[in-house]
Image (cartoon, rainbow, N blue to C red; front, side):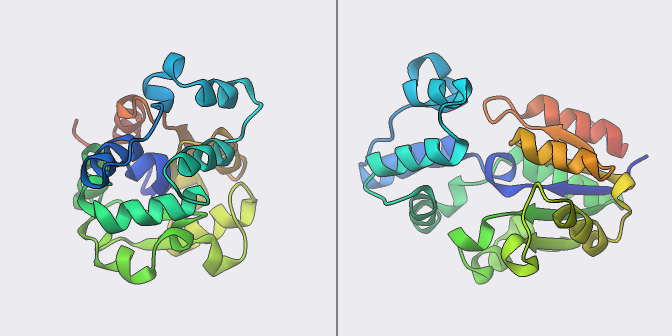
Length: 206
């Protein structure tokens, strides 16, 4: 039995594609491509899959088509325009059910405070009552460095070996596994299998 749940925000708790659709509706700014949802129809995503474009590079390219300098600025604008469209309901349910079952639940992010303020995350109901909220800017180290996970586990109050960790970036999942966590890679195009596996490991009802 695992006693802790640690999640990345972008690509796990946030549903970027739903948020982008809502943003386009509100602002009239179309967002090209659909990444993992329609990989064949998104040439930039194909570059990412081929390894010639990083994930950050992909999102920067998307951001420029929406008139933003980089992906952080784009997502900052999204959180200002359509904050309620940001969050994956299944991820939020997983966090809620884990806490109700007595598991420790927290967030480990490299970029949360680079996108929005502490006040924003503190005010959102999705993050209220968490046992830990760890951002790289607070601890001076980011995923996939081992200390990022170890600091987060300590904040969570669970040994690394007792933590289920979810992230959409393979290198970050590998980093979690290297310190003894059970790492699960989330497919942003279909997150359900990852959430189901986490529920099973945490002993939660489906």
